[in-house]
Length: 337
Image (cartoon, rainbow, N blue to C red; front, side):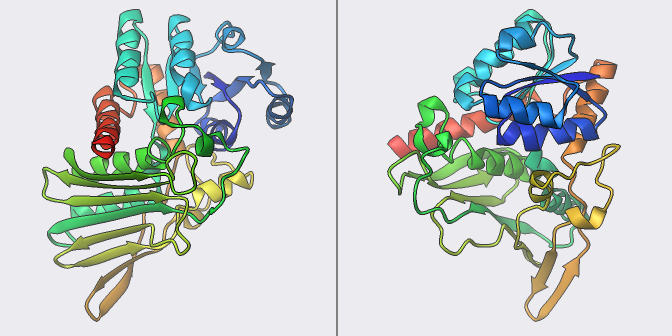
């Protein structure tokens, strides 16, 4: 199957292109505007057609278009692909707010198109492992989940649009990293309402320190923290149950491997150990390592390929994407209120 990518920055080059290839897609066309990114696209995929605009991309013979452009043009690019009759995957966030997200799904339905969003962190090793542990009952009654994406970047990067543009243009950590954290918590613990939101701009640019608390119908509370200004980042995940606490210290390894040029093959990583998180469960004086499930972002695109071949649904549903967007909007409202 032939895939096209619009946008060849961090997301397009490292998170989408290698995982498309790993799932058996042929990356046959790439839309990149700057000379630098056009050159990188040609270096990575010498046989691909490199174009300058979404209008040029949608006339290519494609089975799928992946939108990995800046957040402010996600909707424009997704609509163009849908209008051309091409199924679309959009890098998170699908839209900048609930109404833009809802409008895209409504448009897809009107034109008979297929549309979904890329929440790759659902295929992190820690997420997959926690799903398995919850099913096993290893932690007993689970009552609190803590999830962090924390970094220490005390000065703004003048070349990073996410750090400089406000939410109306798609910038800030609420739309960036918190989107992942919300999606993971809903995936693991089910429906939730937002009970607390702190959305701050510490450095004077876009929001860069965001803390959310979700109260799930299942009885679990999720504490979600995304920040660019934490000098000593905490553990990636802590999950508390009556039978013990699970802890994962480090970020999933796949991003680092992808940035270094490694690619999954035949729908998986060849060395499972390289993409397996270190998981420890502690209950008082008792502490042990729990065998983790290997991470696998390319599984998302393997499922997308099956959906295209069979006519079935994409792996991330409309309702799930809209629920994430609803909570993001709730956080904005709570913060302003």
